Amino acid sequence: MYDIIIIGAGIAGLTSAIYASRANKKVLILEKQNYGGRIISAPHVKNYPGFLDISGVDLATNLYVQATSLGAELVFEDAVSIQNGINKKVITDKHEYECRAIIIATGLERRSLNIPGEKELVGKGISYCASCDGNFYKDKVVAVVGGGKSAIEDAEYLSNLASKVYLISRKDLEDKVEKDNIEVITNYSVDKINSSDTIESIDITNSSDTKNIKIDGLFISIGFDSSNEEFDSIIEVDDKGYIIADNTHTNLDGIFAAGDCCKKDLRQLVTAASDGAIAATEAIKYIEKNR
Amino acid sequence: MVIEGNKEIFEKEVLNGEGKVLVDFNATWCGPCKMLKPVLDQVAKDGKKIVAIDVDDDRDLAIEYGINSIPCLILFENGKEVKRSVGLVPINEIESLFED
Image: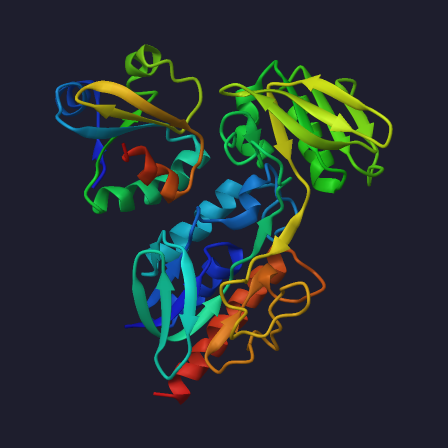
């Protein structure tokens, strides 16, 4: 029996774990992918107080070491459902765990293009993380899909490695791009991936024509959605799937939510960390009261 | 536990080992390698054999197996390479390397 189970090992979840562990609570963190959450794809973090410039991976690793050295356990399993009660239950793809309080810190899920071949080619030419995988494309030709700030950042990062970068967006770009080896193509959407074992080219289409572009790598950077489907049968969410939480309290006693998975105005590292600290503190209060 | 390897251990446990052994080519300066480590620890705890090789300490092995990006995981079966995975991957992809 754990005191607190935290679902998600991003900034919010790991911060919760630090606060709960420092209060001597027995903490289990469940994570379906890797620790750190979305920030690991940022090569430079310059807005986290106290750090002038730190990589997302280093920041995440520091938090992971901090949480686990305080005694929190991290297990790589996918939480598929939760059950409420005095003792609560989290069911994963492999086990079931009991606890007194739950903190949901599932963050956001990246959007995919949802076109044939996309899933199969991840790691074989398709990536969602320029700073993780950019090094594989030194002096090669790549394309970035997306028109937002992070797509532009990805394209600029990759332009220092790849010989040529296509930046392909369905709309106009949100910002200017000033790099000689970036070719901006707007008002086109990617609708076909051509591959043998690895990616070879993409077909892009606008209202009047289709072009074929030969590439070695495709980086997809088209934003994020909430990912709380596993819990929304019992936890209240808004029309976009974000958890409705008041001072991290969800509609169910003893179940809390923290970070980007919540309905909120500002999704930043500091607001995720802040939620994490509050959720842990509220969860501890709940446990003490219901002893 | 993940076995911290070197050239001698690689020969004994991987090349002359029986069954499936996963080799994790990594380096101390590689952030994603650090992130992969707790995942590999869990897979090892579940009963899979994993040997870690530091590409700086054992440069010969890294060259021999053509490692130019890390983290790089290579699955050996009875001493022969059968599968390879490059980059930071979630646990289910590592577990699926061991499946036939």
